Length: 141
Image 1: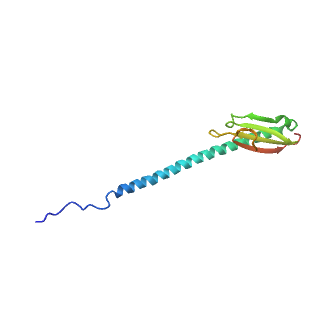
Image 2 (image 1 turned 45 degrees about the vertical axis):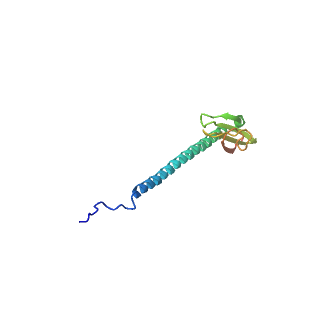
Image 3 (image 1 turned 90 degrees about the vertical axis):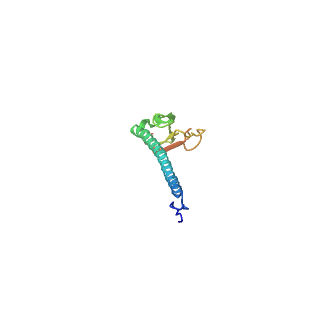
């Protein structure tokens, strides 16, 4: 009597499941890394937006003081006044390029950034990485 082989025949697809699982893990990991990168970029852009908003607020606040006291507006002219409590490495400059017109420049350098090497680089003319500039006409200034 012939002996029958009761064990199943070996398939050519042995190990295919583990390869499919490894590829699925690779694709999932790449998706997670993309989400982490997106989160980091979003956080950086949100921080930069907050700094720009704060700079605008500071400039408008200084202009508001001059509008409230137009007879003494020229007394508000300053150069490189530190405002580090409001912005990181922050400075504000108020100049009067033309009689009755005032230019407020708010500059800052975010943590991890490099400031300008010289204070002669337009448009800030301060040793900062970013600047916000606004101009206002004030009668009596």
